[in-house]
Length: 234
Image 1 (tube, rainbow, N blue to C red):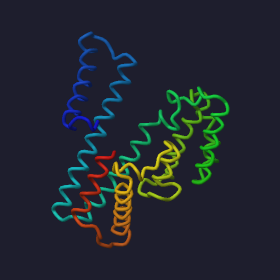
Image 2: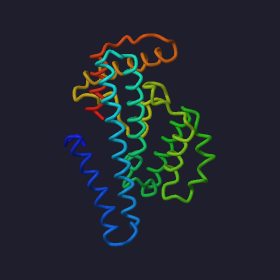
Image 3: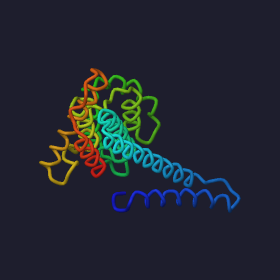
Image 4: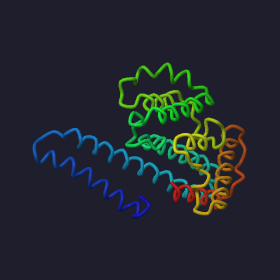
């Protein structure tokens, strides 16, 4: 997605949607199951991109007009939506399972993943919910993953406006992808950590603006720099 301009990428997606729909119309038939999946996936991707482009453009506009407080609030919203989308859309590679399937692992490797799930959910006090809901997805190809997905997102305990706590972004990425997200905002690890620190400061600014009526401590150029670091990394 980063290899071609965003406008071209959107155009490609729109053409794919038109092609799928017109093929069925021209052949006087309904979409087949695989076409429905492709169409739904493409529309979902297009909608996400358009949403992110709106937020990005709006934040830049607000910051440049010196509406720094408002731009900070929207930047955190942009970050929250982006993080949530990354987690949801990459469910198939949680724990780097082969073809997204826990069922294909040997028993000892399954136990490793199950223990990892238990440790994380214990930390955020959701393991009991996981056990209670497991029977709902027992007949799915990967009941552990399906149950985990729904418990994480249905219980509304994750905090995508929090970077460091047990239920925050850093621990969630480490849990699901075994990566330290603090190292992904720049190719230079030291610079990436500094950008992460700036992002943390921005999120704290947002909290103080919303809950305490404080004014932002960040300046216009700092907000834009943080936003650009998110866009280039994610």
